[in-house]
Amino acid sequence: MKALEVKNLVKRYGEFEAVKGVSFSVEEGEIFGLIGPNGAGKTTILRILATLIKKSDGEAKIFDLEVGVDDNEIRKIISYLPEEAGAYKNMTGRQYLAFIASFFDGKEILQRGIKISKLGKRIDDKIENYSKGMVRRLLLTRALMTMPKLAILDEPTSGLDVINASEIREMIKRFARNGMTFLISSHNMLEVEYICDRIALIDKGKIIEMDKPEKLKEKYNAKNIEDVFIKAIK
Image (cartoon, rainbow, N blue to C red; front, top):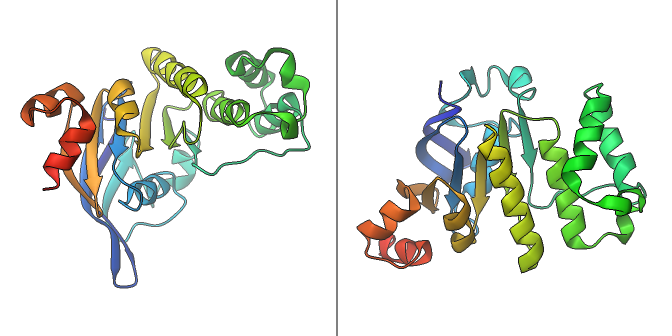
């Protein structure tokens, strides 16, 4: 079974088409990246798949559940981390994870979250005293501790320094090795090249190329995916 199947997905806002007939699929256990510049339509696609906004046309299925029809069931097996996600600053990290775990009625989920976060003693500090990297790690923990079948991450390392970004990438890769499926968006093409099994290059609401990073670099005789993208849009 495919983890995700998207066929001719369209999203219109009035006369403006933000997503223009996008099609792609993701295998179970795969890390798949949507990459492209800001405004390319990446976040719109992710929000449709996360059941937060309605598609205008086309079809999308997550583990054979239809987006727009089976949304309540889909929400039970996915997680979504927006780029601009925040946490309650007056809580400690432990309190925040406990709050999230309470929706799933599981002490096991909380204990898993504390372990995943690797915040150590800082788990009991207030979030207002966390660095940006610590907050992002906490938020990624929130997205992964419920062990979703599909984790949808929008710009997961946005604004982070090299060390924190590297730690988050390694966390994603570790969970993927254990069978979790990831759909990631980023405008950082070098980062996605490093972490993803396959990528789709998207520009102005359309997918312009899609394959494994190495195959795309070979096709365009390019040193990296940034060069591939530049050559592909010409």
